[in-house]
Amino acid sequence: MSNKENLYGRWISGDLSPEEIQALKASGEWEELQSIIDVADNFTLPTYNKAKGFEQLKRSRNASQAKTAEPKTEAKVRSINYTRILGIAASILFLIGAFIFLRSSETMIATPNGETKAHVLADRSTVLLNAGSSIEYEKFRTIKLTGEAVFDVEKGAPFSVITKNGTVEVLGTSFNVRAWGDNLYVECYSGKVKVNSGGNETILTKGQAVNVVNGRMQERQEFGHTQALWTSDVSMFHAEDLNSVLQELERQYNIKVTAPVFSRSFSGSFGHQSILNAVEQICKPMGLTYKISDDKKSVTITE
Image (cartoon, rainbow, N blue to C red; front, side):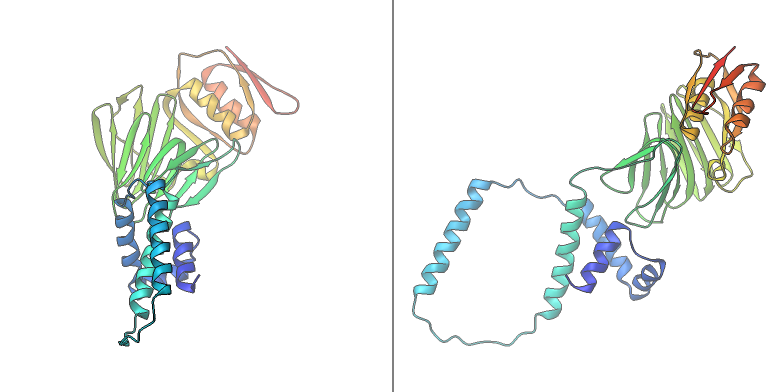
């Protein structure tokens, strides 16, 4: 494989350094690569007939053998330099083939409880997954999200984040999406995002958020932080189901929480550094009692 094909392959897998990306942009090849993305998105292969293909292969082989048996005649040769043409064709075929291979099955990235994970898409958009969350995609600008993640999207074709509670659409921006249970919460840190849920939609700009609870879109909210609070080890909630808050406690600390099914909502936060402080931050405002096991692997909560 040539150095250029190796570079393109690493671009597809998201392994290029910032310096290499800048070099591609300076040479004008970055725009060509982006155009190949669009070609690959709309490229389909016809169904392959194995029996017909085998027959064609046999006919081709027989014809080749017959030609070899014929007396050789001297032919006029025209000297043509195909190096550049073949190089371009090889690069395009390599990229299209790589895209078809990559998109023949879904890519899934999952984060265990108690951990976070960063993932770079082929267009250099980034995804930071919160604990217990996952994404799936075939086309890397259409993402299926379960849980919570921060997205920093490169400008280009439309980018969509699909959850069971609604869809978030952007062009180039950074935002956070939390989609657990029947709740969808979206914060926008730059650019604009459109949130669709249950036939309702709203446009968020920098410093705005929206909460969707049980299919009902609430009024837009204003916030002052410049990044998702969970990336600074704080989980924040806005009138969310208390049971979902306890499930988030389980994910962040990788513990087991035993509690009755509550019919109350919770507004507040808890930190990720101390299980004792986190449980108190949830239970005290709600008038709940709790017991943490000696090994700090389980919590029992009662009313």
